[in-house]
Length: 149
Image 1 (cartoon, helix red, strand yellow):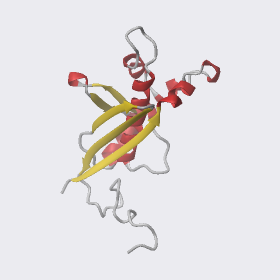
Image 2 (tube, helix red, strand yellow):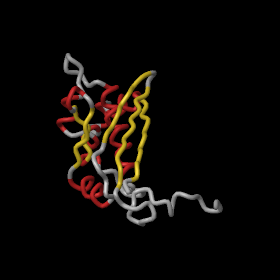
Image 3 (cartoon, rainbow, N blue to C red):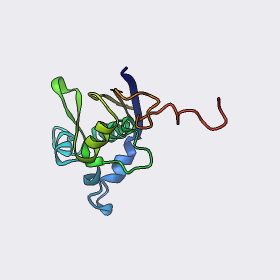
Image 4 (tube, rainbow, N blue to C red):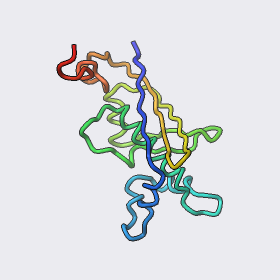
């Protein structure tokens, strides 16, 4: 039985301004691939902070689907690119693709929105692994807080 999964993340657009600060170096390149940086520009070529924040939120939302709590986010292995019709699409590689395979994830869909100084992203997928499997990214064994029935 396929179980639905969801990940969500919210990023203040002002955080992107901090990442673009020339005084802290090319930190944004740690998080976004060259292709993502290219598609995150305004028509005049300047970095589009809202698009960048949306991509960062989407990467975090996808990471939550992977169920890799306590592991580093494979930033470069989760790419948020333009899909058909301009919809965001996800491309996984390296460690991120390995984590998705281990979690039994199906195709990943993502939606991004930004308004009022924030970007939000929701990522969905399904896992073919049983929810009681310790390998399931959101195992029900660990979903109940201690002390709760």
